[in-house]
Image 1: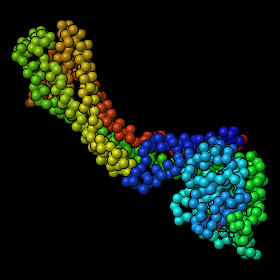
Image 2: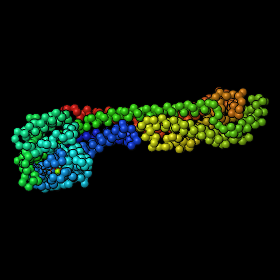
Image 3: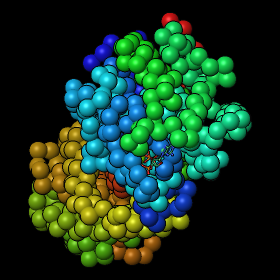
Image 4: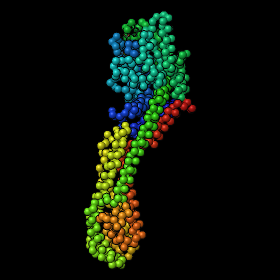
Amino acid sequence: MSTPSRPDLVARVDRLVALAVRRAALLGPEAVEDASDASRAASQRGRELLEHTRSYLLPRARDLDAPLVVLLLGPTGAGKSTLMNTLAGLPVSRTGVLRPTTRDAVVLASVDDQTSLRATGPLSSVAAHRLEWVERGARPGIAIIDAPDIDSVEHANRHLADTLLEVADLCFFVTTATRYADRVPWDVLARVEQRRLPLVVVVNRLPAGSDASAVLDDVRRLLGRSGLTRPEAAAADAGMAPSGSLAGSLAVRPAGLEVIGVAEGALHPDGTALSRDAVEALMGRLESLAADAGARRSLAEQALAGAVAGLTPLVHMVADDLEHQAIDADALRRVAATDHAEELRLMREGLRRGNVLREEVVRQWHSFVGADQITRAFSSGIGRVRGALAAIFRGSPEAPVAAVQKGATDDLSTFVVAHASDAARRTASHWSADPLGARLVANDAGLWTASADLGEATRAALTVWMGAIASDVAVTGADKRGVARGVSLGVNAGAVTVMLTVFAHTGGLTGAEVGIAAGTAFLNQKLLNALFGEAAVLEMISRARDRLDQTLESLMERERERFDRLVPSGEELRALAGDLRGAMEASSRPHGG
Ligand SMILES: Nc1nc2c(ncn2[C@@H]2O[C@H](COP(=O)(O)OP(=O)(O)OP(=O)(O)O)[C@@H](O)[C@H]2O)c(=O)[nH]1
Ligand SMILES: [Mg+2]
């Protein structure tokens, strides 16, 4: 591992990788086939950013002293393999009339360099079976790669060439006097430019005489028109001054971009290589890079800075995508919130109507509080009532506490689950109209109904609620002499009385109204008033009602959170978009130190 002279550059690559990873973690599983084109494209861009930074930039950033990667790129038959053999001084790559000849990349590198390139270095992310390694004729510190053609009928060849273009530090682009104007090479050169890869253009098989300079002029003209980068320009773009040794080795031409012509027929007698004289300029360049580790590192840094700067459009697109996704995510959460709030409202309304409990549940209590003993007591004055009630609450006749509590719990949880299911159905159906929402809903059929354990959770919450009422009754009763003191059955009977009053009373029903619930409420209230006094009773009922309200609200919230959890937070997505843009701003700022 080396100490980079551009620690900021290395840190920036690390940061981009971290941001791309954060994006993947925030968004979870990405768009599938049935997603909209837009969301698929966004997923694709996000994945590309992660793959690109992690596979191509990171290995180079981690080791700027890893061997320099020089790539021979160009159309089939342009003479890449022939040039490779020339630079190696040996026939290391097969040349031929068969098109395409080179199918896997041939990598010329010393044994040590091969190890570091393969292990964690720039070639670690290239499919191993597509690389053929050659060591004879290699220069330590430099790997030369003879790539398959870029205009191949074989898709895999083209893909390999594209990948190599991303990991290279220097490109020798080989074309011919008859091929240079083809479209495909220009597409590839556009990518070279976008990614600011230092570039030398080799125009092979030049015709004799003045036609040669006419061709070279035309090549320069086309290159100039497409704005192809000179190394100095890449350095300036990436906020880096060109190093002295690099300027010496690559930036010696007036037009900036170097174009080297090779005459037709400048072929070695055995036909596998060009004559050395024909490519002297390239040879000289390689030798000076081979002799100067500092120059190699500068070039590697320059290529990396170019690659980082070249990511700017993609990074901004990913940031745009994230901002759109934030809007979508917020909208989905809002829908879930609205639907669940509406259902909570309906649930409260249902409770107010006072018919949540089955009649038979209420009737059990009614026959208890409506027992003769009590009715008689009521008709003979409040003093007697207190006495009779105290007896009742001590357990005679026995109050059907457990049965009524169970019945109320059953009915209320059925009621809650039904409303939560309605809320889920509403939200699931609203989400289905949105591409992201539809994908999430499609992944989990359970979203169309209340969560499986809601019934159980509701029963548990209601048990807690009833327990709170019982403590309230115990505390209130402790203040009233002779009532329910220390008698747990009495406390529980009191609690059931309060509970039933909450259900029946909320709508403001009175004894004058018909129906068992109303009648029970009337009796209950009378009973409670007699025991605890009217003011204390009203307070207890109001506290019980508030607690029930909170319980229902948090149960509904728990249901809504199932939906929220599926959607990334809009705020986090926006923050990530900002961080991504920030990382690119830093990379286009001139290097101050
Ligand atoms: N006459 C002549 N033939 C050349 C010259 N350069 C290359 N060739 C021949 O052109 C043919 C193709 O050269 P290669 O080096 O195999 O071309 P390539 O770019 O590697 O092609 P692919 O591997 O298919 O991508 C071979 O038969 C070479 O001998 C040249 O300057 N003059
Ligand atoms: Mg070849």
